[in-house]
Length: 369
Image 1 (cartoon, helix red, strand yellow):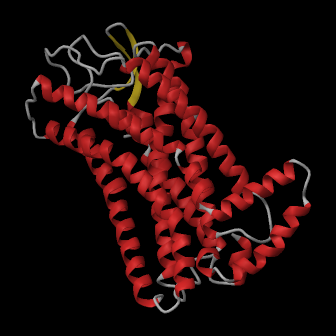
Image 2 (cartoon, helix red, strand yellow; image 1 turned 135 degrees about the vertical axis):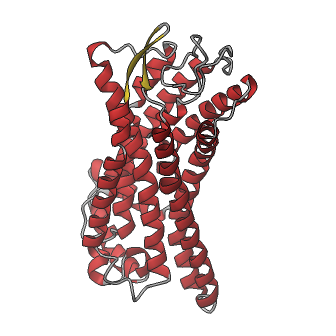
Image 3 (tube, rainbow, N blue to C red; image 1 turned 180 degrees about the vertical axis):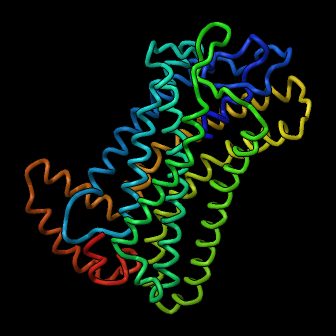
């Protein structure tokens, strides 16, 4: 069950369903008139195109910068960063479809390819959602191992283990996204075809609720515990060494900001989603005003959630000195000044020696990741 699956859940009222063909309504079969935010059709379309352009350019830039091949200056966390950027890059490629659909009043009119595009784009959105939270959880656990369990983690924080973890995250996300691939289809609704979830059974509602709890709230709890433990550890063991404490805090700052951005973006959507599914499973008869609040809440929270796909590149650029240096290397290489790249690699070998918490626990891992 992906974001659009749940976002769709409550927006159609009787035959006068709203302008958004990607909004499904298994609750909304009442006599309530359609009630949407004024101008929301054009706003959503413009916003999705904006997220597409900024997310595509930003995440492609991140992949190029972090993916630079070099013997030194590469961190373990960079592997997770590249995978996060790749997931967001693939996701934003689906947004033009939904933007066009929104601008056409929700009609999914893409000809013979419509059903395939409906299933595939919904599946990609689901995979992106799962992979993002799983990669962020892995990054938080990696920070925990690097700061709190330095000696015990020397066999875990290496190139092979990180790559295996990333492969497992992708496999799990691809499997969890299968329900969206199976259930989503093009359905004739009122004025035309719409890309919808074609089933609202209690089983699917329960599956969606369980998925939300296990793939959002549980990972967020793990992330909070990791960072809480890290803060306590730094306050206890690094007070006597201000330079080491400052260095480790800097290594945490970027990952922490990425996690906060994701939680802030996706928390409203997941809360609204849980409330809606809970009311359906409980058989609560909602008033038209309540249905309208749910619908508009899903509309706003889903737009906020999707905006997260273009935030991370800005976080890397403004908060990660290492990323900015590698961006400078890429720029100098493209403009024909490779000598600066050699100077940077030479100086990076000294920097790595002093920041083992960011680069790994051994000299080999610092050079390989």
